[in-house]
Length: 536
Image 1 (cartoon, helix red, strand yellow):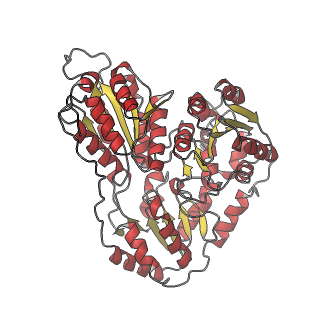
Image 2 (cartoon, helix red, strand yellow):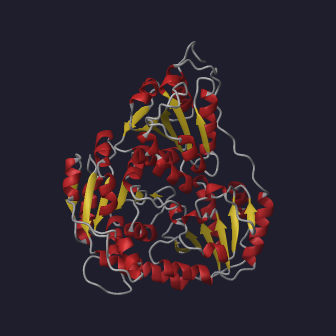
Image 3 (cartoon, one colour):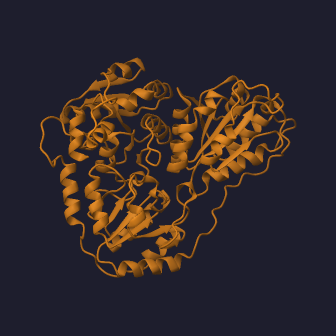
């Protein structure tokens, strides 16, 4: 129960502790020191990061893997403004981020404009809940923000607290914490019947799995797809929801490598079943004109719902019903050619032969050494398309990228958040040298907190994805190339280990070393940016 005169800051820490929050990520400022101390006294660890955006990304991934809200804490003004990237990413990519920042005390005069920003107005359009914490509403505000963050679809909430209010006694008494119960959705029996009917009528169905599927439903989903022998594809954010080495797996759809081949599968299908499919991951407009049977249990990112061909039902109950039925018919292997061509490219059998290291060989070399439960994160760039399509994900929640927002700077902090959540599992961050240079200093964070991530930096001295787009439009190469950076030296400067590897054999050997390292381990892989042209 609440103690007399309990400060508002301690009431916040108590509510977060009751909700299962054991770590908070961020950068401190004088205005949040009282809350920082309250967290420490409650046994909630504070992970000091090098940038607020990185802290928010770490928190979102950490929270999703732990099954609770990930919390980021920053100061006011520039600290709060730097949360934009992380909040926008969590909004579009369904990551459960609760961001807390300081703000100007309400008692200060309006003429005090130093570091004053309209933070609530800025963040309300891309968060699920915004509120100012005061001594009068502290417990309710935190619980409302947590409930919004953890309700489907997952997403960010934003709270502010002034240093003045943090010290004042909380007016609300403590009450037992209760996790919010999801509301029942739709009619699962009717949805199962209609889905089976539509599949029975199809010759070439393709089940497209998306971000709206909760990982807890993966076992039942796999049983259904395997029993009915249905061809299946995934969007990048749910790689590993099904075993990508299985014979019914067609590929990764949503703008990854060899996207033209994947689009052929979509166009050849006579029924697309969008099971949890969310167009937020798609950078083209085919979802607007190809017929899709939407099978959802919540709105898509940003609260959107399809206007037709929608089966809205709890996926757990729906899959229970489907698994009690026999398949309505057999479909054979309608996408065998596409699947075979994809596998050939993944093995390095390029469409156009070239000399030197091939991008697919990087993936092959790492996958040959790292265990299948390895968590992979990527940054944004050509390497994201490469790993997004060809990394053979086997288990749920083992592949992470920024795809709805597609923001550079995601890969390394996401890997650190994942390693803290799953310390016994290898974590690989696949980065380009452009993205790595944006927040390479977080290697020191990883070293300091014991997050022994493996970092592969594909060094092509170019924003190669933009370079290819520039050339495809007939424009001269301009503003896309940069000078070499010694990424291995950067790793050493941050207290990590690092090696350079230029062949598949060297990459595999470096990965073996990295698995046994007791500090973060960086592998720099030089690559000709022209090599990406083969898988574009």
